[in-house]
Amino acid sequence: MLIQRLAIIGIGLIGGSLARALKRAGACAEVVGCGRNTRNLQQAIDLGVIDCYETNPASAVKNADMVVVAVPLGTMAKTFATIHDALSPQAIITDVGSAKATVVSDAQQYLGQHFSRFVPAHPIAGTEKSGVAASFAELFEKHRVILTPLPETESQAVDIVSTMWQKTGAEVVKMSVENHDEVLAATSHLPHLLAYNLVDTLAKMDNQTEIFKFAAGGFRDFSRIASSDPQMWHDICFANKDAILSVLEYFNIHLTQLTKAIQQGDSQHIKNIFTHAKTVRDKVCG
Amino acid sequence: MLIQRLAIIGIGLIGGSLARALKRAGACAEVVGCGRNTRNLQQAIDLGVIDCYETNPASAVKNADMVVVAVPLGTMAKTFATIHDALSPQAIITDVGSAKATVVSDAQQYLGQHFSRFVPAHPIAGTEKSGVAASFAELFEKHRVILTPLPETESQAVDIVSTMWQKTGAEVVKMSVENHDEVLAATSHLPHLLAYNLVDTLAKMDNQTEIFKFAAGGFRDFSRIASSDPQMWHDICFANKDAILSVLEYFNIHLTQLTKAIQQGDSQHIKNIFTHAKTVRDKVCG
Image 1 (cartoon, each protein chain N blue to C red):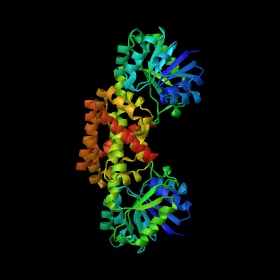
Image 2 (cartoon, chains in turn green, brown):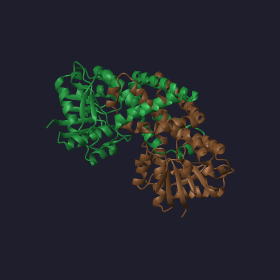
Image 3 (cartoon, rainbow over the protein chains, first blue to last red):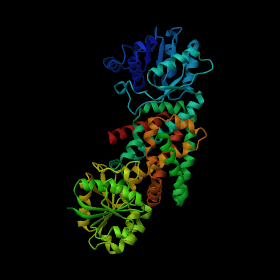
Image 4 (tube, rainbow over the protein chains, first blue to last red):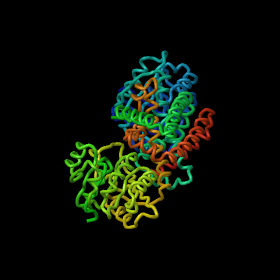
C-alpha cells in the first residue's frame, strides 16, 4: 500500500477527486478529511470520498504518512502553522495550489523541520464547479501534475508524491517554481481574469438584459471559467501577483495594437493576428 | 411549399446548414448553391446539401423566390450589385451577416428597387468550424435569429423570412439595426477579439512551447472561438467598427481597474468583480 493514512485538508473538488482516485486505485488504506464545514464533511463520508473527518487540521494529520493541503492559497500559511506540531517525523506533505512561490515561502516559514519533506505540486485539472459533490475519480486522468521540488526537498518524498499522482492517471512533470508561476499566469490566470472581467463589464452595461439574452455558444464557452470559485481566484491574484501583472501588461500591449488596427482599418494587421491565433489554437488544441 | 427555388450565395457552415434544415423540413423544392470553388460546391451536392450549383451569383438567383446571401460581410456589396439585374421582381432577399448596419447600407445602395424585399437577418448560431462539411441541419434549433427590418421593408417579406427560420427550429426575434450591432459587439465580437488576442499574445511569448504544453481545459474552452474563420472576423471588425471600439474601450476601463486592484492588493474590489461575474454567468448560462 502506497499510503497508510492519507490526510486531506480541504475536501473540495480537487481534494475530493484525489481521495476518490486514490481509493479507486487501491493506493491508500484510510482517508481522513479535514474542513471547517461538518455538513460538507458528512457529505464526503456519505459519498464514500473519505473514511472519517476532523475539523482541526492538527488532529487530522496525526499519524498520517501523507498530508495533502488542498485549501485556498490565502490559508496555506495558517494551515502549515496549525499542523506543524502534530506532523509525524516521516510524514510527507504536499499541496495542490495554483501558484507555487507563495506556497513554498509559506511552507518554508511554517513547516520548520518538515520542510524538506514538503513537495510543492499543482494538478492542472479542474472544472468551473466547486465542492465535494462535484468531485470525481477521473478528474486527473491524462492531465498533467506539475511538481516544483526545491534543492533541499528529499528525493524520496518527491518520488512518493509522483507515484501518488500517477496512480490517479495523471502525468507528472517537474519544473522550477518561477517557471511554473510564469506559465500558469499566461495559460490559466490571465484567461480567468479576462473571463471574469468580460462578464462583469457586460453586466454593468445599460442594455445588459438584452445582451445576455443574445449571448450564444461562443460566449458560453468563453465565459465558462468565470463561474469558478471567486475566493480561490482572489487568492491566486495575490499569490501570483507579479507574474499576472506582467502577462496582463503584455496582453494589453497587443490588445492596444489590435484596437489601433481596427480604428485605422489596418486590414493586414487584423488578418495576421486572427490567422496566427487560429493556426496556433488549431495546432495546440487539435 | 414555402419556397420553390432557394438560392444560397455562399455554401459554408451557415448557408449549408440552412439548406439542410429547410430540406429536412420540406420547406423548399429546390436549392441552388453558389460559390467560387467548384470542388466545394460539388461536395455540397455529394452531401445532399444543394441540388445544383452556379458559380455566378447572377445565374444562381434567376427565378429564385428566396435568395439568401451568406457571404463574408466584405463581399456583400459586390454580391448585391452582381445579382441586382437578375433578381425576379418578387424575389425576397435576406442575409446572415454578423453585423447589420453595413449590410443594410450595402443593400440600400446596390439592390435598388429590390431593397424593400430585403430582410436583414442574423442567426445567432455557429461553431468555430467553417465550410460545408461542418454544416448540419440542427445548427439553428433552439437558437435565436434576429431580423432587423426597416420601416420600408415589406411586411410580407419579413413574414416569409420569419417562417423560413422557424422551419429550421429557430426562434425569430426583431430588433433595430443599431441595437443589434451594439448587442452583438458585446456578446460576440468582443469575446472573439479577446480570444484571438490572447492566443496571439501567448504565441509570441518566449516560452510559448511550454505555455501551450500546460494549457488546460479552461484555456481550451476560452480559446475555442479563436479557431473561427479569420476572414469572417476580419470583415466584422470593419463592418461593426464603431460598436466594437466602444465596447472594447468599456472593457479596457474595467480591466485597468482590475489591474490596479491587483497591483494595490485591493482584496474587496477583486472579490466583488469575481463574485459578481460568477453570479451573473451562473444565472445567464445556467
